[in-house]
Image 1: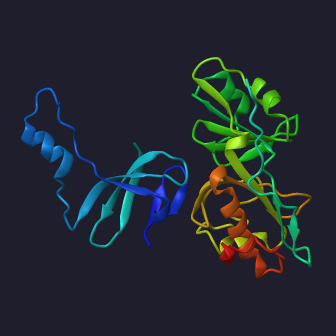
Image 2: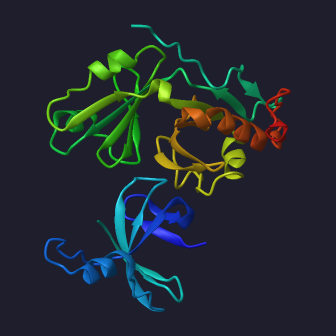
Image 3: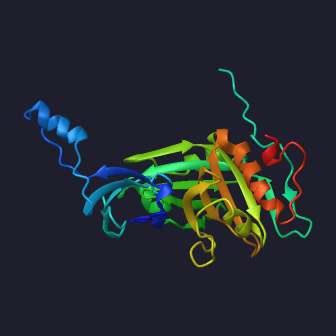
Length: 82
Length: 193
């Protein structure tokens, strides 16, 4: 079990939340290439290291927020509302 | 226009343990008004209860800070229109009567928290969920809105969920209470379904 700190609800079982994945910057669809758009949609770095992720508090406040999570240890640091 | 008569998903009298330490009753008829109001609106200033807490207003309705910028007001049966009309709608505000869309139950008694703790992962201790606490979380796998609303000093929780899950939730909670002496009538056992 991972305990994820929601900025509104406090520490919650990750089962009450939904991970929305790594934070990636969105390219301008009017000017980017198809490759850049595809990489934005599907390609992730997925390192065994610290990653900034978006989570959705579906069981609580129903707000999105970001955290930094170490994907190797599940250690979590930092949190802010999206 | 024809009126649709809504009825509770739980057509059952209140259940009680023989020692009285846990009681479970349907509270579907409770008036439930959901208010979403942006910061700076008159409604937000009037309701004022912060997220995670609740208070009773002068009319005796329970005003709950359900989520950031969202409140739920619970009142006696039949008061939904009155409560809704009392909320100013100037600005970025929505007021919705969700009375019939949400099932609701009340579980009370000194063993209530222990019974609920069997089927949820929330910490229901007095320290984290004191009287008046408002929170959300799954109970028996069902997404629920909770209010700790003690009655005459006795621990009590008001729990609501989407109406279509109401009967299952009641049965799941009743099953958790059997260990604490609650008598569950035939046809309402969890494993009979």
